[in-house]
Amino acid sequence: NAGVTQTPKFQVLKTGQSMTLQCAQDMNHEYMSWYRQDPGMGLRLIHYSVGAGITDQGEVPNGYNVSRSTTEDFPLRLLSAAPSQTSVYFCASSYSKSRDTQYFGPGTRLTVL
Amino acid sequence: GENVEQHPSTLSVQEGDSAVIKCTYSDSASNYFPWYKQELGKGPQLIIDIRSNVGEKKDQRIAVTLNKTAKHFSLHITETQPEDSAVYFCAAPRRRSSNTGKLIFGQGTTLQVKP
Picture 1 (cartoon, each protein chain N blue to C red):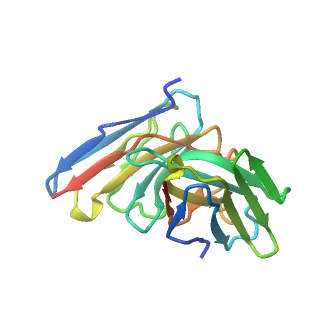
Picture 2: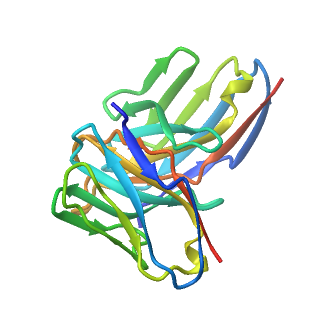
Picture 3: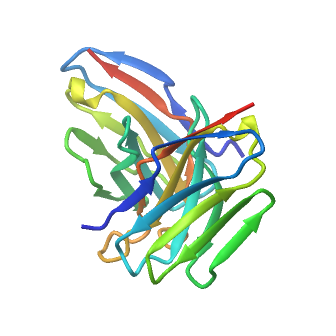
């Protein structure tokens, strides 16, 4: 199994541009989530999904959209990038919402100029 | 609100010494406490976890202890080695809402093991 994969690894955007961060897992996990990591603030939950077709907001959802059309994929969309969205983004998955062990992808480092 | 506090934010030890990182949580309904290790340029990896029906769990040089009354849990690393240098995160699940299964993370501890 490849586990949780994320693309791209690095991205530079200009303010106002849009882009999609890709996340996929091949473990047949129901639960997937997106976090952002900023210095001194740990990992903060952006959005999560408990299964295909179901998504919900986390702690810091503003400026981000998600969808879950398949069990495997959980893309994160930035519709109009802002410098405040400069961060490292991690996707994670777990077997189900009641199985708490989460497996993280390698991350995407995003810079918004 | 529900949160997880982690201390210290940085920790420097000599190779061979022990390192202890402590976390406190606010949600008394939390029953699962994982610890993650994040090496430079990589995603967090689960290294050990504990459930609320036990007070201590060991795996070779690492151990986690849980005090449910005081609502804190700690990571203990003995005989530290340079490869233990990383950022460590504790976490606890948020239970008191429909948002079951979500983890709340501590702020992270940067551990440096000096040879």
